[in-house]
Length: 620
Image (cartoon, rainbow, N blue to C red):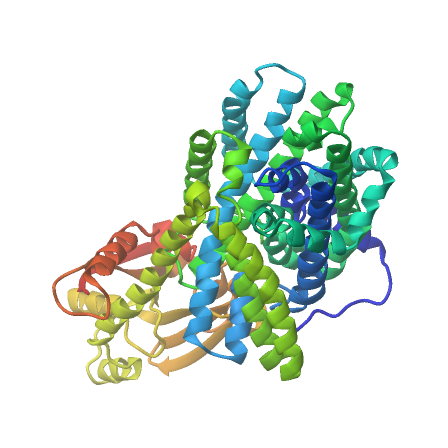
């Protein structure tokens, strides 16, 4: 299941590692703006012992969570090269088909949407707040400035990331080099801060101040919040470039900067209000604010793009209603834009910036969702390691429990922040989870109702042979999810017009738990006789569905675009008092979701001038 690793460095590896810096490490790379500050201000005093203890916690969090867990273990669990929680869930269910694992994966996926909303808000706001260091009363313009930057960022999403993507990597190289250099300047004056690499200082902090140290974990966790994004973007670059970028530049830059912030607080405890920007000489602060703002925009772009990709995958796997998904690059199939998600995220981000007012307040909302998602990742990884990789039970138990202790420690500390904002990602994730499970269950109930009147396609063909209706020239394509069954639209058309096209193709689109299906394995054609064909088109959850193009590529049956008409059903769902497997409120929610879903014609990329929609009421 893991990707093959090449044995030597090759020229393309450096380029991929450079690109990965911008896309993969934007979130984790901008955490120094606020993470160390919040860890100390969460109930600790800025003493030398505390600064060293927090620095030790930060360093070992990066080592254990990112270097060992994600870089070393989780990235081995690739689904045909793809990463991310949905891909990991599919892998786990391949080897252990449990509904509980599916629900865990869906809940973790839902929580990621909360992360996608908070990251742009807190990152951009923290960068702009750096103006406080050099400009009096700059805090008054931080919120409006952050709001303007966010509006501009979301407004540009429809253009895609291809045009600016080439700038991401070089900018982040400058960013990591800069923050590393700032850290070195402080470490030179206090080289004793390097002792923080010893975990004894982290342990000592818990021994001396157990409750305050535990509370600080909720903020220490902010330094590793990009771990899930790192795994999700693995499919774009592969594991080797991501590992090279991490150990070659990102980890050294982050470690030096956090140690530098600790050294500064040791020498000047009052600098704890903004240790990141106070590490810079006075003349550097304004350019540093500009660089930080650009870095946070890049970090936000990565999270927003991730939300688009996640939504596109969830829609194709039928966990979310159909939405308009625009492909913004002719060469990169993973670059998509989802307008509904874009504007929803923008509204939520602006609400967070205005509602919380500062990055310190927003830090209270950050962490609960991500820690829960990371714990879910550990559980799913344990299932894959045991059932898929064949690891011994003892090794799986020890590694899973060890990682869960770390994950749940962070989760427990973040639970203390629920009252101060941690409720938001839980509410947002719960809402998305409710929509996903309601849509999935509603689709099952809907097709159960529709199947009651279906007949096998072979029976229809036999009846046509016995009593042939009028056959008109051309090809009719009927889309229906169940193979070998008669689409309701076909029956309605036959009864209304008493005729059929010379060629009738019943198409069933199936999306697999694999990210991609090779074109050679895309279609399965079954001739039924008398001009009838059953065609099953299979796609991966990361593939671009294009029914018209794939049918046109078939030699038999003929589907000449100029003579083909597509018939799709448009069910009108009504919720009634008739008992079903869903609660009444969920029936009503599903009816609203179904009514507002994008049309099947747009989703399957059918030519709009050759589509006939046939509606029918369905009661659930």
